Length: 259
Ligand code: NAP
Image (cartoon, rainbow, N blue to C red; front, side, top):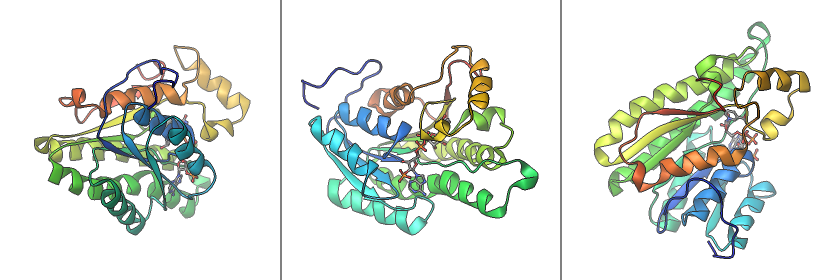
């Protein structure tokens, strides 16, 4: 990105010449990750449900800062959409070095009141998507004999959280999946790690009642909520060549909540 850009604090790695694909890039944590990777020199394929609105805004922000980005729309919970997107990214950029699976949803409710649709939607968007993208991008990375995959899970997968049986299950599935795929791909110089944000200020948490936010804050030793940039910083470190011997790990970025 242009030298005139304000310097971003924290971890910065050199991703020049590399191509990154970030799902959930229209808003929140995914947007912060897309901006950070672009800042480090990656050309970024930004994925969300629609080409318009917030996704276009993210791409414009990267262009304005002198970076390269392209928007791709689809439902990450549908394998046909995922295969189409990965194929289009490979055709356009001729490689794929970094995959960040960040798209996610919540459909909270207590177990006995949770209907099948809310269970299925969360499993599909949060877990199936990770399988589809890792399978499709993994094939490209195997051919390149290089790759960095970062799957965004959650502290809810580690601690459990009442009202989030579907969400916690989906994110715990991401952890088991990450550890297994890390072992499968390690010989090809491809690392696969999971980052588990704690309570982070985005649209996802904005909708929670103040009472829930107060309870959440009391559980955080740092006594403050995370910002999307806090998560992006760690994802950026894991995306670099220097993180080549770190694989199959879950890194909680949560102000000490799960320590
Ligand atoms: P957010 O602000 O609600 O953004 C969600 C993103 O996912 C949006 O870009 C959205 O795209 C995309 N998305 C949702 N469903 C999709 C689908 N079916 N197909 C394609 N894209 C889809 O969420 P966030 O807080 O940044 O969360 C990002 C990730 O971090 C999620 O995996 C979440 O579970 C995880 N996380 C968040 C927190 C937190 O406190 N915020 C804590 C732990 C983990 P559209 O804009 O097109 O809808």
